Image 1 (tube, one colour):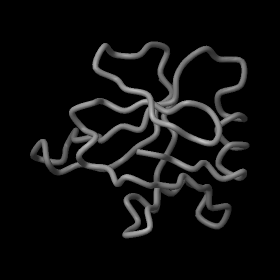
Image 2 (cartoon, one colour):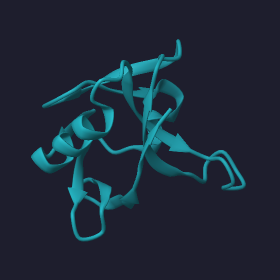
Image 3 (cartoon, one colour):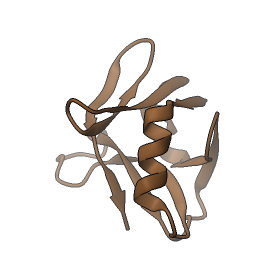
Image 4 (cartoon, one colour):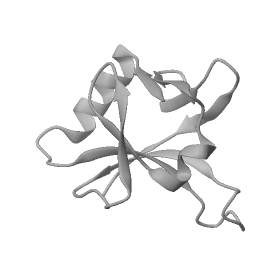
Length: 106
């Protein structure tokens, strides 16, 4: 699995996390979605990793995902930032996984 982080997204991530220690995670968030297979992708900046997190190759900062949730993501993805909608976007060549993704700083 590979994730490309655009320049716009990298700058916004840096601005939101500057001066904080932690890790960037791509979460498959199922809270409030009714079932474990229904969820939405979200970016989280967390102070610690969980033991089941795995590192994903990117062109910028490392991103981690829960190993068990990797099946919900595509092999090639891109994280971008839209200034029009003021949010992050997670895309792959096949689909838009989340067109209005937020960055949650824990």
